[in-house]
Image (cartoon, rainbow, N blue to C red; front, side, top):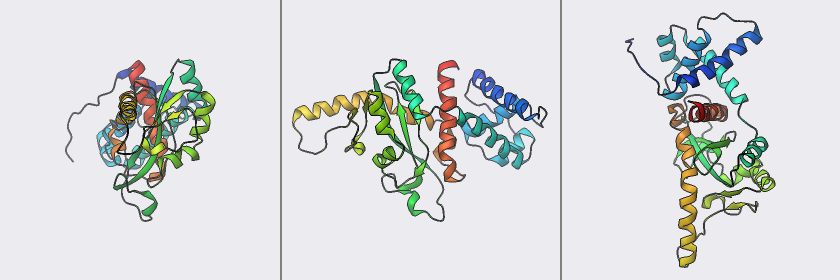
Length: 257
């Protein structure tokens, strides 16, 4: 195997944040010494999440076995995922921060074809994957991400399963969503008008709706700037935890990086 110098486009502040979580975890477990120190383990994890490098490549690059690289990543993802806010807490924080508008959008985290592939195939995206619901601020800030459901799950069905509509109604923050959410029971969820022969007033309303919703939907692009989420090579069931972990890192990178 050949080796070369490389870089990862994240700030040292984000590295130190993750290293601190790992260091405290080791102190709790009573295992302060390992083959890699907390900073090196944090860098290994960030390289995996940001650049999508395989465990074999990580092991070769950091001088550990493939299984050790896998354990290091699993530990860090669990630590980060635990820090992802619950839905109720996330919406309360959004209201406290003065957000008067939210954007609800679904995204597909692509995965390799699995044996029982039919539930994971999304006809909309024409590929296999997992459905993730994302609530974002009007500027694209990630407020909350859901767990993962099979790719064929309709966005509106997913919102009902995760209780998103109920919590949005309780919070009372106006939430914009695309046409896939028409029929949502929440009074605060606003969707565009459907149909081809709409009057000009409805067309203008749809243009304004799209203009306001567009920046918020950039949250999904932010998540997929972490190359691991462009196509998972692990169990599809891990998609939700990976997205939550990456959302925590992305928000930290934006606010403090």
